[in-house]
Amino acid sequence: MNEFIKALDLEYSYPVDEGRELVSTLKGINLNIEQGSFVALLGHNGSGKSTLAKHFNAILQPTGGKMLVLGMDTGDEEQVIEIRRNVGMVFQNPDNQLVSNVVEEDVAFGPENLGIESAEILERVEDALNMVDMNHLRTHAPHLLSGGQKQRIAIAGIIAMRPRCIVLDEPTAMLDPNGRREVMETINVLNKKYGITVILITHHMSEAVEADRVIVLDDGHIFMDGTPKEVFARVDELKSIGLTVPDTVELVCRLNERGFNLPLSALTPAECAAAIAAALKGEV
Image (tube, rainbow, N blue to C red; front, side):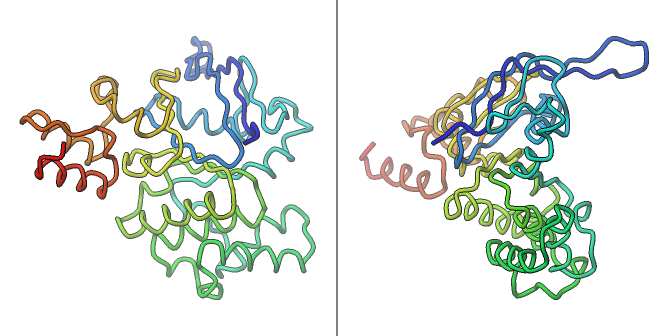
């Protein structure tokens, strides 16, 4: 895979009040994200994860170091439009991204603002709605949809602008379990079927399990970086910075405290069930 995003000694500080010292939220981040990968970004509140995400499409500019997207410097004003064509952002509350009274008009809003011709906009809307499995609701009013459906429409609106990367900042935080499942299924389809690079910020560890790679931030630094199995095996370290682990890992830890010898790499419910069954049969 080719390098898509590169952070070089990235720093970001902001003033709390006029005349007071700057507060540093990113402290020398060095990071490469490959085209076509699915990366989960974790960290407690205030760790810097949302601040980092806003650098990926130049919403924020570094106060030190550089952020490069496809080799383009986000600090170069002449490159910002092209960077935002390639990196789309989806936020926590879908209602904040829905602007029209009809689903298909909402999805068309982004391409229209890019100056795309009408015929191509129609094609993009059709493609985007199919990709999130929402074409059957194209003439519905967004405000009548469920939370999960609204978020999928918000994602479709970003897809219609044809980005090569989508950054999702806690997109399931306001959703019920069914809505969360719908959005995660959509994210996986976009990544696995269509090759879109996905960067997911989440507090739900079960969602991070689905990623190819997990990056953990703490106090503006990269604390961990590895596969889900590598990261979630470091249970005590994660808990030391205020994070939890997937329920499956927590269950395995508790069983191991009671004499079992189960692998912490059993992340999914199916893997966990298989490991417990093998242990009960004396195979582990």
